[in-house]
Length: 249
Image 1 (cartoon, rainbow, N blue to C red):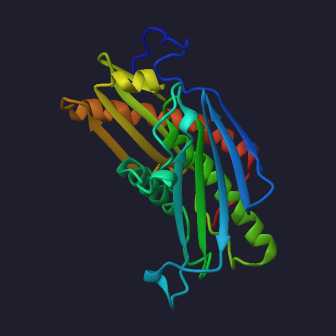
Image 2: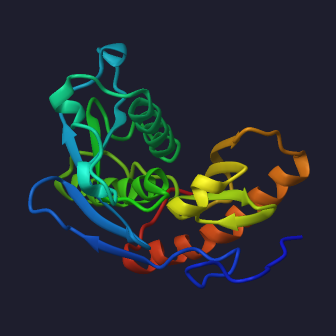
């Protein structure tokens, strides 16, 4: 059972997510775009549909979804290192986050429905206070959903490509307490840090849990999963209210 204890520094309960604001169609260009604000974390996500396939799918009728992720140097209180595009060296963390976003998005997409095309999701963090990858997954999904709606209207897609809503949230053990949707300060002190991705049918897309200098128990993991599952329900309700979608039965 999840136990709600003392208020956190920002006034939230242990099992409470930060306020989420979503601005659909934030950019003029692109088939779909979103500005997502989750607490003090802000991410711009854009979806582009290209009539091309990655090499491993050439000659097939299957499409692909992939993601790119970056963070502005002043997304943090202090300027980060030089932009990766300037240094010519992309960090391993960037690749890790991009792969996670791509895997999460593909988990709810019928890749054959989009045909021989690639949907590129660009996620650019303009302000960071923890949870940038989970916010990118949520914003990336909504941008992709807008692109899919447009593709259906134009007749590019034979059938609706999306199978369910998608949401992600961070959860961790901080000072022995299980907390949902960690801020940067909480994340930096966490003994266990996890990012959990769910779809709206109640199935998991990904669980990425790490012990920061210590191990954790199966009971700890179950508590974090239960808290994340309850937390994403409010995100799914928000998604349904701002962007109603229908899925194949």
